[in-house]
Length: 160
Image (cartoon, rainbow, N blue to C red):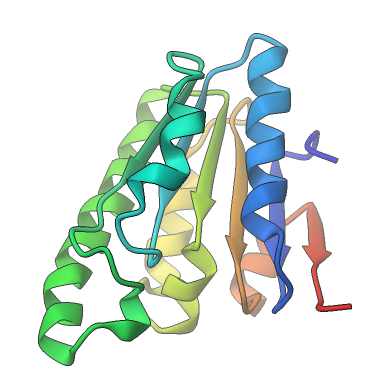
């Protein structure tokens, strides 16, 4: 389930992040290094504490400053948070360029594409920055056509 180099978990159902975190644990148990970057979910430290116990094999980052979901913020707060999101995106690209991990999980990233916070050119530059040895897992609600070009495996999760 986590063997493909580019995997996407999308859809309106619950469990996308959980599935991606399962890939992180599986990869780390095989001796790989994993970096997780969360987007648009607010600063939820308590939810990530368990994964932080898996350091140094699994490292978790959130560039959010607010504890609220992005959609619950005022427009002013969203603009400020967009700068933090850009910092997270730039960090993800740096991780890929430097080859810091075997698996990079970009949790909530599909929302960045869907809401035009990240351009098609940004996605292309991100994907071109990775080596063939680095896997990427994307999660989020709405799958973009552009990302579908890169994805080897897409799991659509629906309420059932």
